[in-house]
Length: 200
Picture: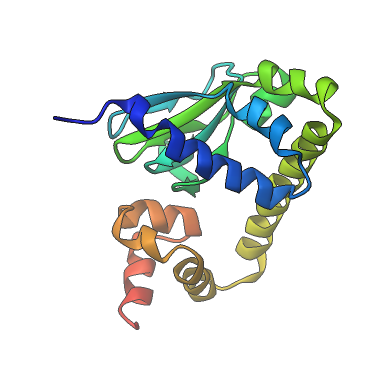
């Protein structure tokens, strides 16, 4: 008999706890625990469009199990902007911060278990606990730093260097993500990716 989704919750909560403490190690455990208890758990089928482009959404997610592709469409093509696996947090940041509709589509590439919390609930803890507010600032800094690094990599690294970096940092994704999505993420064609992979 398949396990109930709720039975996974303690394990994913522990992973979330470890993730947040890695970002802000001095967060008091009792305050962090109160926030974590506000997350709920949902399961989704492979290929589910979690968040379509053009909508407003204020939900923050943590991946307990599964794989998320974030992409946008340009000239009729899907451009993969981000790939996220287990123990990663994500949110439609532009929509949350601007109040405008989201530009990106969030798709689940595998059957997934996600923890989620409404951003308004998360934000309410900023005024309640200064340490949680500090954690929120650190999360934004980490997110911004990752975005800047990806931009710099595309601008200054060759296609082969970008692939080598991807292999180094995301080895497990090579067997989980279709090559067309990896090529799009790296900013190259699938043919170029195939030529690079043939060298290794």
